[in-house]
Image (cartoon, rainbow, N blue to C red; front, side):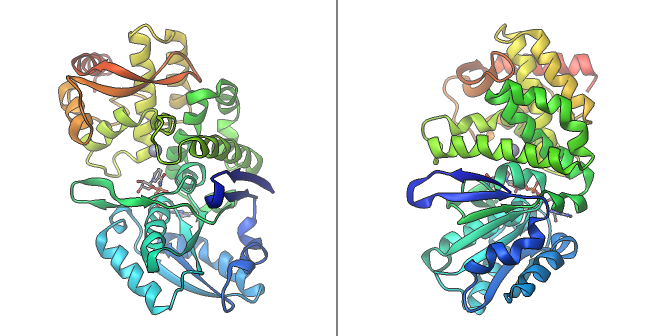
Length: 371
Ligand SMILES: NC(=O)c1ccc[n+]([C@@H]2O[C@H](COP(=O)([O-])OP(=O)(O)OC[C@H]3O[C@@H](n4cnc5c(N)ncnc54)[C@H](O)[C@@H]3O)[C@@H](O)[C@H]2O)c1
Ligand SMILES: [Zn+2]
């Protein structure tokens, strides 16, 4: 079993990664049960595919399971479902000392984490992430939220889990497109500050996406190590270090907005295209070599991820996309803080990106790829 520690003083916790961990969950989680019982919150897809494994293992360890099953999808990160979840938890007489299990992707993790942060002024929760995105990103770091009418993730809290238990074999039931989208966040860690890990990604993405347990475990371990180090350094995104995790996300957010935050472009797919755009824009500014930008694009293309406006199914022109970027960001005199790169593994936050220039770049991209 691989173990990564998130060092946050009194809020420190472990991330355990092991192929087949769900079948050993009874042993691992037994100590968190109170009165011989654990509440497991999940969504209907995960309830069908993975909950039986967790239940069987907990029952074998004499732990009774109280499942709460919510509808799948982003719409579940809403006031309505938060209220429904809190009422269900209260009906089960959850106490502050209890540990609620969040079994699912980022939607369940974000919702359950936020519910735990406010239920009886805070009870414990444990992340058992079942999508690659959640295993390498959202289950670690304590950002919890629901969506508001005004935008995504606008209502939430920093609230760390007590434990993160990752079983890469849960990805066996995840649609391959979801795994590929989550893989974009894996590549991101190499591009931020670890060029050797990007090399590893180029060599091992095929095995990882084909379901090789060792490749998956290694990718998850490297990713959570990177995220844990950044979170330990800048838990609440105040020093700017945690902002590096948003590489590709400003462009990506604009692409997601243009495609209506729909199945046309999954979050990780938007991030993939966004990272390719960030590298090509960095090359256009003369910050990064054209070779590095081409290498990033080629890798994303090779694994079947979107890597330009056409493959992201984006229709809008440059100014409209920049408009999406500005929508929920603070703008200072026509500039926006932007993550750019001096090369693979050399991402930095630039404070003086000129928005008109970004719009012109996106129009050039459109002309080139025929989007
Ligand atoms: N808190 C953070 O730091 C953070 C970081 C990134 C993203 N997020 C949030 O994460 C959410 C996206 O998470 P996601 O991509 O995991 O999506 P998701 O939770 O919606 O899961 C994607 C789909 O896969 C299904 N699924 C999950 N695990 C499965 C499995 N093992 N087998 C079969 N089906 C399975 C789900 O039911 C859903 O239909 C967004 O709301 C985003 O805002 C949060
Ligand atoms: Zn992301």
